[in-house]
Image (cartoon, rainbow, N blue to C red):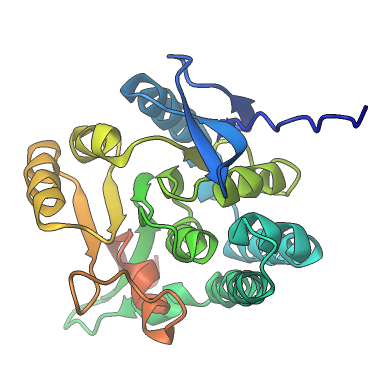
Length: 295
């Protein structure tokens, strides 16, 4: 009798640990009608717990030197490179050669994006900050500082689930922020595997927290949760935009929504226009310091 394969039991990554949803609910993930696994269908309580875990990690991560954060992101890129084949298979969810080739391209772009932002770690402050000329016996300069806990709503479709998620995460955490992210609803398994890689990386527990579930259920709580100081949402529809605008206004949070030129099309995460120091600047606050000359 042939041996039956053991179906993987995916868990979400919160506070450096792998957990199931507090509700016990799951979402089945299929490949050609074959069950790949049941991912947790996270609830609002799971989101609140993830925000608490991120808030505990925020001071320590922000206190790290920019150089050290760059080292950690670079090391994370190395780890993705070493597991490229496994990641590609997870992204493709198919043994089709064409799909696997596209998935390998996505994994390579994901590694490149991490290395790109690792290089910005000790440079963005000089670009975004400024020394201000003043008429008086003092120095005046402006410095970027992390905001704290940032929510991320990854694109909900199956297109580039890994590259899209990392393109949102990397510019947020490189400046010292921490993240609570909702993975792609249609393709959550790459985020599950990313969590397994993060667990054995140098990234401190709680800096990145990954949830899975239904976007329609969790988006309103992301919008209104007072513990989230900013929100980055991809492929936002008109109805979602209204919900996010109202929620962000009520909870006083910064809102960064990504929409394609054609609202019916997803964001092109391979484009160089979606990366840059401006993406880092979207999630920092600016502190202006006055310092007497000679003091």
